[in-house]
Amino acid sequence: MTCDNLQTIEKNIALAAERCGRSADSVQLVAVSKRKDLEVIQQAISCGQQVFGENYLQEAEQKITALKNKKLCWHFIGHLQSNKARIAAELFDVIETVDRIKIARALDRHAVALDKDLRVFVQVNIGRENQKHGVLPEDAEELLVLINRETQLKVLGLMGMPPYSNDPEDARRYFRELKQLSDRLAGKKVFADNTDVQLSMGMSADYMVAIEEGATLVRVGTALFGRRA
Ligand SMILES: *Cc1c(COP(=O)(O)O)cnc(C)c1O
Picture 1 (spheres, rainbow, N blue to C red):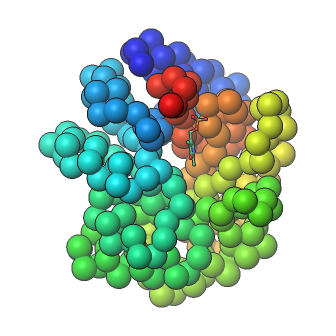
Picture 2: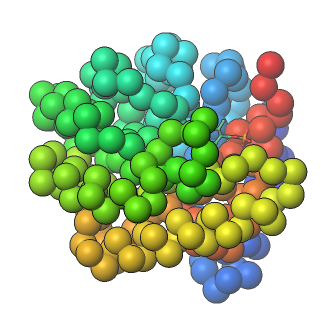
């Protein structure tokens, strides 16, 4: 990767944000470094990137440990099993993939033991796909109420992934639905900050569409680091 890639993406983020009357800094870039070497991450850090996303705990542990003297923010964006909640709560600042009360309870237990303010997103299965994780849109409110009642986790907002498509425009309606869901749920006061609800949506192929529909975080891997092996 080169600093040029990062600058191009940041410019695209700013343009997409400005197209809909938002400021460039209302959108955060999460650099998805899964299956990329430490050197590649170090290069991105030297270009100024500080927020990274990882999917696999073992792989992430090595990288996060090696870079622990840097001021970085790590987002977990993979599927999480409850028996891995302790290591996830230890390593990561933000867990984007909470989709059931069991995992929320497990993360909370370990965060409390670590005296850590763990921030999370609730992952919503916006395309209702069998192969994808995430709570169904109609069940999100109930899950959020339970998380707030039973845990001290700080729920920043919602995360979602639209069904795969070659055309980024196909994702627009799913992004819009996730935004509408987050607006409705903010009205029910289920988030840590209901006036500033975060929406993690959009990847390499469709992050500009996601920003136009209200994304505050985009998770970009391939466009930044090149294809994964
Ligand atoms: C891999 C991954 C990304 C990044 O995908 P790219 O298409 O490489 O940008 C984003 N979000 C999640 C949840 C991922 O697993």
